Image (cartoon, rainbow, N blue to C red):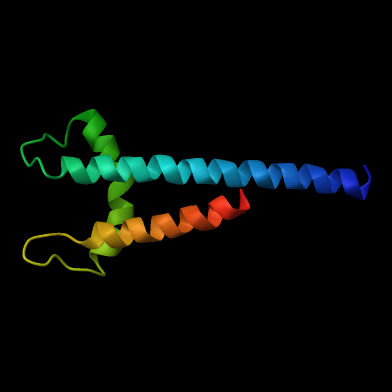
Length: 97
């Protein structure tokens, strides 16, 4: 293969990777929204397999920000920071995808 062909192959692979990463962030953002909305319903059984998987996927990311912003008046504002960082990542990846 010549260098132009290799460049095109790597460019195509990088583009595919960036588009995939962008789609992952979009899907993860939607999962976070669902998780946060469901947290408003304390009667939900989080041992339900679907809710348990949702919690296992989203809580580690949200816990990073819960350590930075403690709850104020019983309200957890850490998801705002989580969404801000995710939005920034989506913009950066979207520019290159």
